[in-house]
Image 1 (cartoon, rainbow, N blue to C red):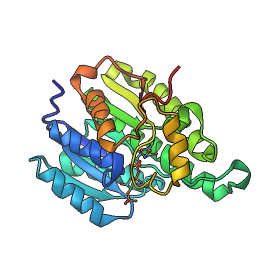
Image 2 (image 1 turned 180 degrees about the vertical axis):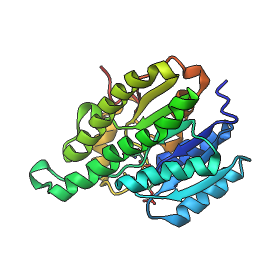
Image 3 (image 1 turned 90 degrees about the horizontal axis):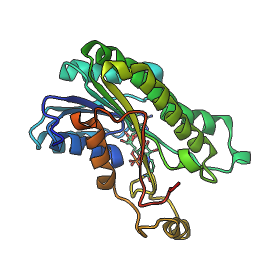
Image 4 (image 1 turned 180 degrees about the horizontal axis):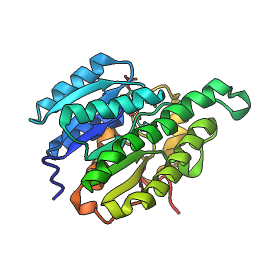
Length: 249
Ligand code: NAP
């Protein structure tokens, strides 16, 4: 079950945190993986070493997904490195938190451009080949903030909600070509992104999580393996929360 042998994947922001865990999990299930990163080449090199140690082909590609040419360039470099692209994980993301009255245009644009515009350009660049080969998996990492909003994260919540609308629309456009488009919405996951929170903020978040613990990247990765698999062929336009029960309807 969930055999990804022979599949070729690109994980944006795959050098650290959730993206790194997803890249490793895809490789553990047999996929060749290109990871993209923006700034920290050392972390990317370490991730590539860990991926190769699993016996798959692996490369790192630098590129800021907020810049359209670099987003497209990352996808094209992945296709050149692996020969094809079957699985795209749009994971690269960042936050710049403040109350909406204090958010400036730069705070808005940077967060929207990285999370949402990056997802658009990478998806568009990956889709052409997927449509031709009539098989593809696009997995977008959104957030519970995109489902229920988060005070102090109006820009991030808007970007992550936008990713969900985008994924559902694209899913409808390409469903007939054997391409699924889904989203994973993690809750609070221990990574460098969340490391800056105060103990007080952390305790407030913990009180909202029925499982009474924060998540780790390895909690999220299996969801991506499932959505990338042949077995998930009939799952599309779906948002899979991985949040210890934080969001429940
Ligand atoms: P992280 O630990 O900060 O890692 C971010 C990764 O994205 C790094 O590999 C980073 O590479 C890369 N990246 C950042 N900006 C980029 C850009 N403009 N272009 C290309 N790559 C870029 O973050 P994380 O917590 O793992 O988050 C991963 C995803 O999960 C994000 O989309 C985030 O919004 C989402 N998420 C996280 C949580 C959480 O609690 N942690 C919850 C819900 C959703 P460099 O080091 O080279 O910059």
